[in-house]
Image 1 (cartoon, chains in turn blue, red):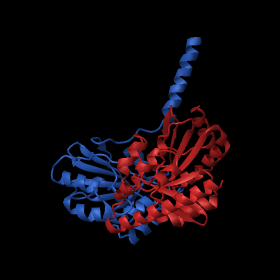
Image 2 (cartoon, chains in turn orange, purple):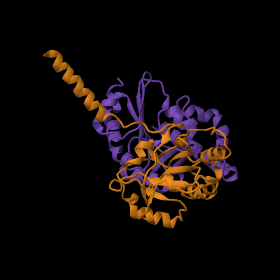
Image 3 (tube, rainbow over the protein chains, first blue to last red):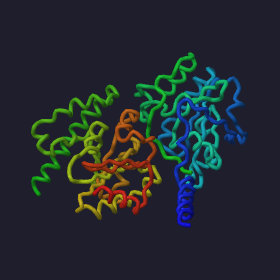
Image 4 (cartoon, chains in turn yellow, green):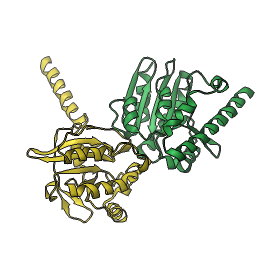
Length: 202
Length: 203
């Protein structure tokens, strides 16, 4: 009888642990990233597989309200302009729950995309389902994917460059270096970087 | 008391002097790292004013009776590695970070309640540079923050973030609790009860 009780207790603890521990930590470099079907600011659904002539994607988790994200808006537009024609377009995703962060509502995303003349899809992660699979923790948070036979392989995770404050003072352009390497068929040298960002509000 | 006032005045003066040099360097070349050379060798007089090793700020921002010292990471690191009988609670935050602002009163409460028990809170602001005078200083005044607030100005985050903790993804808020024997890092928002409990483990 006692054994059963202990067994029951152990099972209960295991059961609880399974539901209270943090979700999986997300993708690491080399993992295959999931595709998605998310609503764009033009109300049409966008999936990675639908983007024509792509050899890969610069997936940027970003949002309206975060000052760090705002500091990078122009640079994200520049990345898309430079790399779309080389087969690596930007796909931006707002992972925040607008109930927690009003400025990140879909309507405000539409305003933002228009005001900043976004040249790329700006998608809404409705229900906050996609960002945890990627393991994004903050905005901005970049995942560079390369299209391969086995799927979209993660080649880089991290920051856009090494100076949020001043685009003119940037010494290392992490994302550009990574995509340049991929375009040339080379290995990405700096595969992961860290930067301050606004935590994602789910 | 008088000597304390003198010290403060002299320090402020030294800070302003250095700050004026900084601005010049940045305006000219945009490479603030050069400044480290000018501040690394303070005059004997300046060095005597502070406890051994405490870094001289890049600049001291002052507005409406509130002031905040700005450090780059090399300087700030001093405050993350002190070895004495105090437990330090270092919170990384910003005025625009909603969960940070929500948990800030807990750090203030902890700081006030355990002051005599050798627990010291330091609030490290990661506000944008442009917001120091327009947002950070007015915020400190409005909320009447009593804990030490410093401003970390170091855009090369990929270099310094892992030095705070290798697990830090860069999301705010984040907190480092340490003393001479223990060190623990938290990338999360605290309730007061959680914070008090964590700190109690550092005894």
